[in-house]
Length: 503
Image 1 (tube, rainbow, N blue to C red):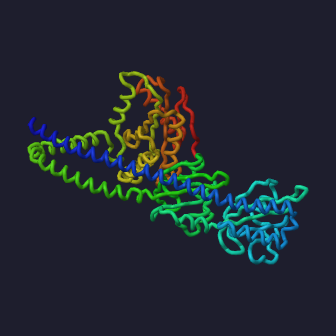
Image 2: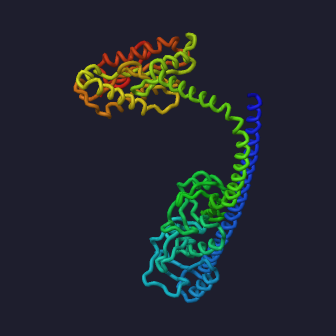
Image 3: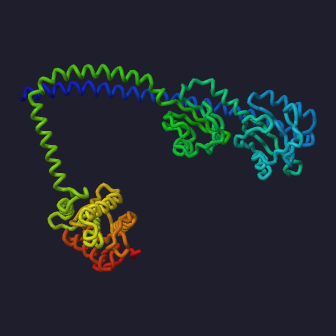
């Protein structure tokens, strides 16, 4: 037998060693692949952000040049042919600009770089116009993406306020930057089939995206994990999150623009990033499996002699566990039985010592249960007990809490590390849960099954013995029944106080 055990141990160690080394190597390779992808998306987001920054800088320069010209020539020059030619030439020199516009103080079109000017056109209702009319600032304003009324294209407005000689609001100069320009620029980059590049406002409103999803423009992703946990807290960085738009797991690089309230997101699909690694991992695992199987085949013959013994031991262990479970569990309700309850309490009050931390106990009794059995029979009575037990179990959400069938229709809930207030609150939830079941009970004055509950809670070192702990909770239960049943009563310093009145 020692020779067999040593041979088996050696075989096992060989298999574990080979597997561990391979798994460690695969894990390191995976980490390396993700690090490379993180660097890639970080660089990509920086490149995108720089390009977008430059694009809006150029639009801002064009708008500023028009504002300066109006300041020099006067706003009256806006409607002249020279201004029209100047707007056309300026707009044509900047690829991303769809058009340049000048609006007077009432929002009427004064000039445009377009070939024609719509009759009676007015943009006083646009967000950028309202912004400049109400805020005296010479800084550029980037508005949310809108759809052009003239061309129907989606644009981002870049605008500046124009003041007259007295410093009063005279109008607005606007450059419209085509979103299609950014989407076409994004198409130049290889981001895989499931990668994504997104241009969004600082609040998460999507401006442009590749690939474009229907109705995605104007949608906010500000509540997504990427914005909540990363973008809002940091100027730039990387994150591995699930997209809230298409639920794809991606490695994202993000960077806020330096001069504008926007952010660029570049994401690579984690599936695609790890595709090659995954294929390599499968090949490695296949080789390892073959090696391990070969080693195990040599070890199988050695283990045959002890197999029957191990099987017998396993069966005995299962049988022992089943017997232990039967000894500690109530067969009707599935709750712990009184023996289990006594064992748990004895651990809390070892050798008669006081409790070391707060403890609470809820004693529960079904009201008029004898009448219920007499009217509906013992089978129905058992079902009633099971229903109450389910209400108790469904309201316990802590691992250490113990629900017990104390005896007959009486049950208990032991709450370690819980104070009186928490126990009373839980007791009332259980009482209301039973009432919600609305089990018919003609022998109860309220017509349905109800329960009475007694609660006792003690602070650390307060209760000296297990017997006193149970007696006080039981006394509180007695008081609840004496006061009319269907209520929760708590014990406090030898005085019983009604925690909640009966409905």
